[in-house]
Length: 308
Image 1 (cartoon, rainbow, N blue to C red):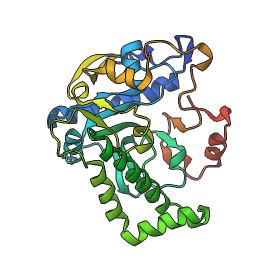
Image 2 (image 1 turned 90 degrees about the vertical axis):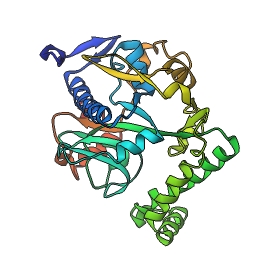
Image 3 (image 1 turned 135 degrees about the vertical axis):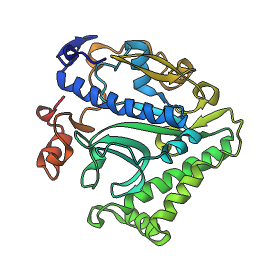
């Protein structure tokens, strides 16, 4: 249960956590609580991953300088979530995935329209730009040859779809060629092809490995290549003032991604997680920043504009 004293400035592990950062955490945990309700109702498994899972294990909450929540789902659970009944969802909650007014999103974000969480990539885009939590979808990845083909194709299609939504005056010849190709095929058909490529190995129900071909820049590194057995089940652990799910095999997942994940970084490297990649304001809706020159200044590196 949230105590009012929680929303105060505090130094944690040598890093000053502001009340505003904690307000952002509360917003994200509220989104996670909403997701939890949906997943219980629909019998969906999910889990915190990456820095969020490190926070759960190492800090029993957020890494003090972290500002987002990363989640994972196997494809079958992800599909259940996409198809869940949304008729009773609060109007301020928005799901961005696939092709929408926002452009193309190959990972899923659940956003709160009452707040601000504008990424560098959100600039000049339409749609909800509130604070968010992210869901990464994992597909079967046993065959190395097919996996390499998947990553090359998804990388090409992802970049091409991104070009399709760019203003023509901002593109070079290569990007214009990509946009032309997508326009020729059709954006919906291109997305459908991208989606099918991600699922190429999913007919192997007893696959040993899973990965994120929908996010080829990550998958190419091998850091998202997990054992399916490690992420098929989740366990609850304490997190801030609540409990969250992490993969039952979290140790091997985090070791694959980070190595010695329980070791704290040096003091001078604490606090540089998403600097100048996301502009957050937990106190104002994103609409207050639409077309604001302040955003360009922030993404150019103006630290004085930071709201956390």
